[in-house]
Amino acid sequence: MTGINREWYNADILAEFDRPTGLDFVLPADEPEAVLGIKVDLVTPGAIKPRMREYINQNLIYV
Image 1 (tube, one colour):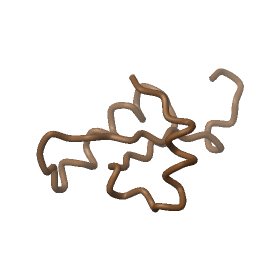
Image 2 (spheres, one colour; image 1 turned 90 degrees about the horizontal axis):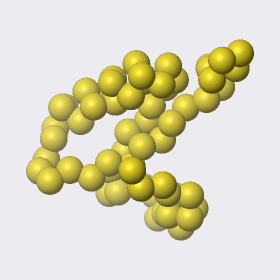
Image 3 (cartoon, one colour; image 1 turned 45 degrees about the vertical axis):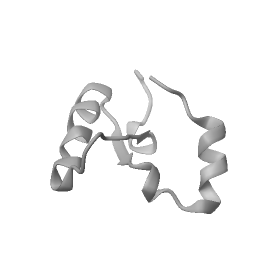
């Protein structure tokens, strides 16, 4: 992302965990932010508003 204003970009990551994470949920976003150099929003499937679910599912990329 050389030469791009990174303040305008972010990555939205949909994460599923095997067990409840509590406040530890925030920490996994730190590493991708450091690697990518952009803000990362980390959400779980349960946090997605029903009206956004179809849009997100259409644009979801599994990694």
